[in-house]
Image 1 (cartoon, rainbow, N blue to C red):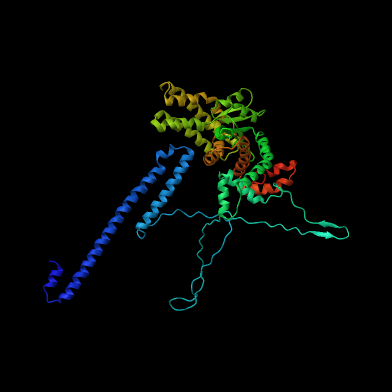
Image 2: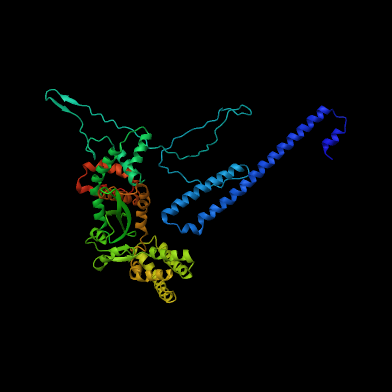
Length: 513
């Protein structure tokens, strides 16, 4: 029986009974509302948990391996953002019951300036008994912060002094500058060049960034500064190319870019050729970009004219003419692997899978010899890599006889066999690379960045970009901050004689980051 009905049978005051009924009804309504909210939260937590599990599977799943390099980078960024958002929503649904899993906090670079904020208690007396508090330690936490581009003005004051007897005036000389009489200091010029050639921002976006800080920088002024910087830096880029050609082993690759045809308002294909010093060579690494209006092999032959050494390239026919009398060809194992990977991803071919396994063994050997000097590496390659290569070659020949002509697997095998002499050549040396990945890594930022700037405005603009990109890429390979290196170089360049130009190259002081 309902307790309220039992209560009504007593001699309770009717007004009091009505109040009790109202109170019980209110509590029941609140309980129903709370149950509905909890049910909704449980449903949302379940949905978010399933979504979180899905994104984690997608992040590490097979499909992510099928994306191209820049596509995968964007894909991973998106998934990371979505995972963080889902975890934040889950924590909001059940903050008390759910504890966020945190990775170990990375230590912040010790060279960064520190701004200390001391947080003292409101009172130095105990809130319980009033006694004085005694310091027993400190809890220190650090947060990383950043300031947007901060513009400021250098004000140069040169007092003038007169000699009355001689009727002469003396003042401190105005130092030479890359842009005489210009209002831009070297730090600003380096920032603009870094924005354009490292962050791939068009000049109109740099103009907008400055405008948000209240600094009017006309696009025409920015363009004029970049043009003059390019002229000033060209001798350094030329010298970099000379030093590159002194190496006994080089990597080469090329990527298409669009060049504007001002007469028609349309664009046509041009190419940025990339050359890198051997990844196992002694000395500072060098990257040089060479802008040309086509993919003709004559451009590579002109750049490497008279050079003799080992050249690591893909199977592009434009390089072939050089190998008849001159450089010695090296073939890229990563390109061979990529073809088998594509076949295996598309069809699950067991033959392609076995090829990938055997190629992985060769890379494992290279990892084993990563810290060795050339004599130690060649000994390791002769002991392990040469037998593995011989087994791979024999297996490819045997497999080819069982594969249908014209099939994707057959084409991958044929490609490997055709490149075999150049492919196995690295194992006979302790200083030759196994693949062309180093130059592909150097060219990748430009390949991604061109989605922002879309096209080169002219052939001259392309060559200027290639020169500046060469210096920036070499600086990064040598552990330098490219913008800081450029600011320092622009300050020294006007007074540096040609005989000391090597002191300005982006590896001369590679210990200064």
